[in-house]
Length: 167
Image (tube, rainbow, N blue to C red; front, side, top):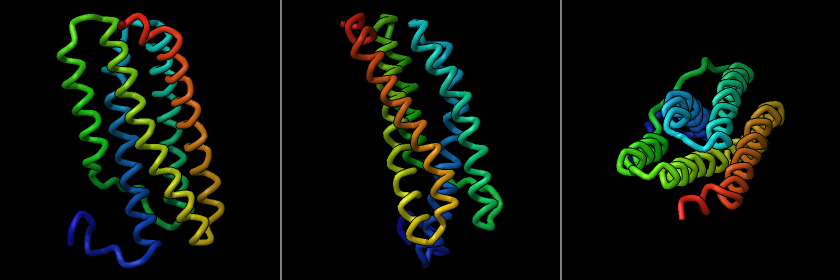
């Protein structure tokens, strides 16, 4: 049945499926960030990735809380989108010898991840509210706020120094 499983018949089913999707994505991000930390040469970028790793681990805990609040066990479903973003980041980073250009590429890849997460959390919050689950929406909003803040920090870092050094 296309890209979704046959189990999805209601908005509630779709909400749970997308919750499983972002749960998978956040777990994949925790696996990818240590490599990005190791490859980053800019100390600020490395510190930002380290901070985001800690935030992501807390976001996973919040997602587990939302699963429980919604009466489901935490479960992940494959997310081809995040797998593709991470694969592309790894391939691009593997092709760049210049360390300043590598930092710009890593930063851009991190922003692609952030933008994906922002879209998922925004949708999940809207659906939670539609389902009358403002409690779930409130917890998900904490994750969304952190994703926006991280994206803003990455943009500032890119504009202030990383992109200029790469040029």
